Structures are given as C-alpha cells and as structure tokens.
Image 1: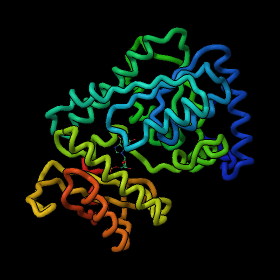
Image 2: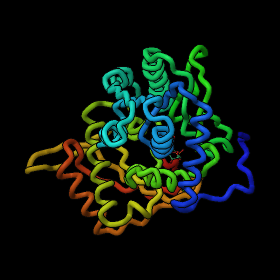
Image 3: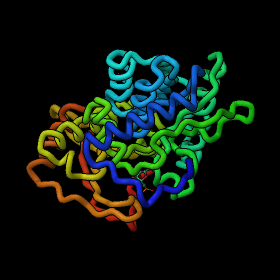
Image 4: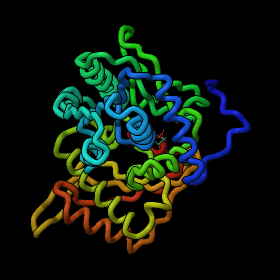
Length: 325
Ligand code: XMP
C-alpha cells in the first residue's frame, strides 16, 4: 500500500464506515501475517490501543502486546491497559513494571533533554529485552497514523521502537497508517474500546517525566500524579474534559512556605495548564471558570501531600511551549 492517502478515500465518520474499514483491515492483516506472530508496544495511548484491538480481532493470540510501565504514567493508566486488554479482550499481554529501572537512572538528572534521552533509551532497552525472550516473532505492529507520515517522522517517537537494534528489525504491520486521529477514534469505538481510552488527550512519550521538572524524586512524582488525577476528575465532572484539547499539572522543583494545621508547611506548587490548539504548533489558553479553579485548588492543597499552592499558567504558545519540561 502506498503511503499517500488516496483522494478517493472517504473519511471515516460513523460506525458503518468504521466497521467496513475494520473488516477490510482484518482481511489484509490476516493475509500479511498468516500464522506468524506480531509484536506490539502497547502504551495505552489512542493509536497503539486501537491497533491492538484491531489486531486482536484479526489474529487473536498471535498478537503479543508488551506494555512497559516506565513509572511515569498518569494515575490508573497501566491498570486500565491491564483491565481492557489483559482481562476484557483476553489479549496476549506482557506487562513490565520497569518503574525502579527508570527512576534510578533518572535520579539526580535535571536537564530536560538528558531526561528524555534516558527515558527513550531505556524504553528501547526494556522492549528489546522482552522481544528477545519471545520466540517466533516475525512482525512489528505500530500505531503510525497519517499525520505521522506527513510529518515524515516515519515511526512514532513516543513508542521509540524506531530505535530498535539492527538485528531486531521486523516487517511492519501498520493498519491505521492512512487514518487521521479522529478516524482512529471512531474505529476504536467501533471496536468496543472505552471512551476514556479512545478520546484521551495527547500524552508525551516521556510521560510525567516532562512535567516533574528538574531531577525527578518519587515523592514529587507521586504528588504530581495525584494532583493531575484531581484535575482530570474535576474537568470530567464539569464538562471541560471534552472541550479542552490538553490539560495537566506540572510540578517544579522548588518549595515555598505555607501554613497547614497551624504549622509551617513547605511545599511545591502545582501548576495548572489547559490549552486549546489544532495542531499543537500554536495554542491558546482555556478560560477556566473561577469556581472550578477554587474547587481544584481546594482539593489539591487538601488531598495531595507536599503541595501547598496551586498556580495557573496563562501563557499561550508561543511563547510558552505546551509542556513545561
Ligand atoms: P510542546 O511542549 O512542544 O508540545 O508545545 C506539543 C505537543 O506535543 C506533545 N509532546 C509529545 N508527544 N512524544 C509525544 O508523542 C513526546 O516526546 C512529546 N513531547 C511533547 C505535547 O504534550 C503537546 O501536545
């Protein structure tokens, strides 16, 4: 198949078209793969999840999904991968909790680019180690989508499989590579994946590693994860979750003085960032109503150990990038 999306290809906008696409791809994948095994790095993001569900439908247990938890996932994410793919879809799922490996390598590392390199490099290492333990793998599935090809990245940076060693190259299976993101979501829903997985906001490959600023510590990472979960919960409740493109908490490596239970309480600030964009090249700020901001502030400062202030980032992109790093 050519990498250029044909003009004639109809946009997949409803279940009927999605089911037609699924049937076609199931047939094509079966033809390509035969009785061989396929490996997939399943991050739990939209694209890899939809590819997993599609391939489970096409080839069942011939698909081996590997989910690497690098310890920088949002609250509940790895658990959802295990629940949906391991239990509900009965996938051949290998779950690797590599939290300790990643966090010990990242200890004391402050520089953003260095942190990214460590996370990316270690991801490949863990994935490669697992892949080598498996026998008879002939194909590598990827959640490449059409914009990835247009941007000529070729392979998804956040899956990092593009960097597999020379002797670990497989033939690729890329069933959604001609689809746009909104089409991937429709296909995912038609495959029965939960909305909480398919409508998920973008999440960087290095995960919370780019939001736990400076050198990552377990306690500050924990505080960030809990504060982020509260933000997501409150955005869900008030309807902002389906309206705002991307929203999250960043926690810098600095403390200020506060008062808790009449005692001096030094804590980190939690910074709220909520942006809207079309292509992530530029972004505007979502105007969150004050009562919601107060509720979030109240919950985070009361419920999250180590946080004593909540701040709001009002900076559009440019000049601020979306992530803080
Ligand atoms: P910035 O911070 O550059 O982010 O304005 C633009 C968008 O890209 C996301 N992002 C990433 N996505 N792997 C990804 O798949 C990454 O390493 C990565 N880093 C940033 C960011 O969340 C925002 O949506």
